Length: 89
Image (cartoon, one colour):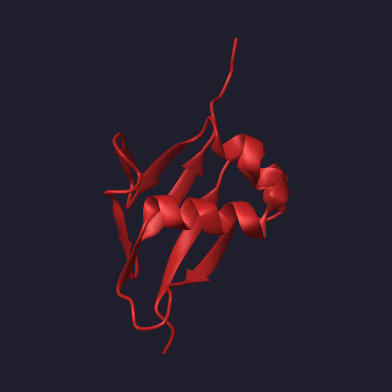
């Protein structure tokens, strides 16, 4: 059975990927990966997502992430949301 995390894309992130969510398999023999490594993987997978990720926030299991992405680990079964800035009026 594959060890996966779920990525949720909102607003311009959804537009850049043409999907609202996808499953990403963790590297073999690994129970987690850093949020930075996940970001690098997403940039390779979705070229149009690169500029969106530069200004987006992340939420892991519905909790915002606000520190060094290298030290944050994403584990099997986690749900990671990509939340671009929103404007309104």
